[in-house]
Length: 415
Image (tube, rainbow, N blue to C red; front, side, top):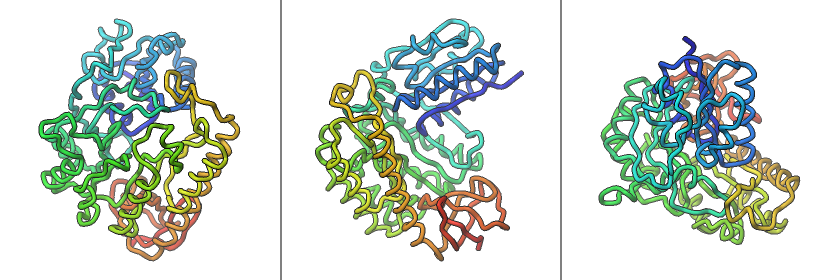
């Protein structure tokens, strides 16, 4: 029997959900599962290529397509050669969807907008990874003008504290030393639970109830929804990793308003300043869209200046991608070459900030979670490679001293 092959695109939540499917589909023979992303046209193109490649290389395999792109437009994916079934984002997480009988029953894609709860799942292994992801939240109630994801994920809904604790405890018992809390809009966690708790309270409970968890990290957060408990943890809790990844999207107030974001540049700058005041060596990342409709050179210059002024070292830069059905897709577009050129300039500014940040870490004692026997990430999420003759073990936390900076991050010796 050939175990199911899973091809995952997109976010950390998809990575987590692929592990849920791996468990559910373990008994199936000769199946390829393609877990798609709909954030950009490029993400969809890559997933379509993967489907075609899988059919070409394994013509007898049954191909199941799921994920956000499949949820939004199931018919399009069902029409691809070799696809035997399309599953929606709710259905892919149900064990009943992965029986031999179910596999032959055609597509199953329900109305995701009718979803009102998120069923917890127990995952104890992430194939090939030393860092584990835990879903704490699903869906999104916001309507940013560029984003199609709410229509692929449905409304915001939270995983209860007890289920999150059980999942984290199981992962720690399986040997994972770092857990990343993930979701579509994790800072909205708790809004649908009794008492409307906040994300920081969940983090406090996790650290208290799973004392053997060594490192807790957050995925992308909304700048205006970072609650006071998160700030207190950043300041005083060594097991809460000193890293923030901001869902920034732009550094121009005009563009932020046209995106229908809920923060302005002053809000984001205030978050960066407060974080660095609490933890001077904190790592800070941000998602940024280059070439959003109506973004002329002056408005782009504002975003570029924001990145430079705030020295943001870890950028995820995306050239704007039209998503049919979103308000931004109807706005005056920027030429595709200009989007790509602006994205390159932003990435260059991020690389410059990263080199400066890494230079400040030289000579310090860092704790690195090894992801291979020679490389990993520090608590600040700085990429670290061991000096040429040094070898560790994937999954171990090493204390190292950086001795050099290169284009890929830090080079360090084990202490």
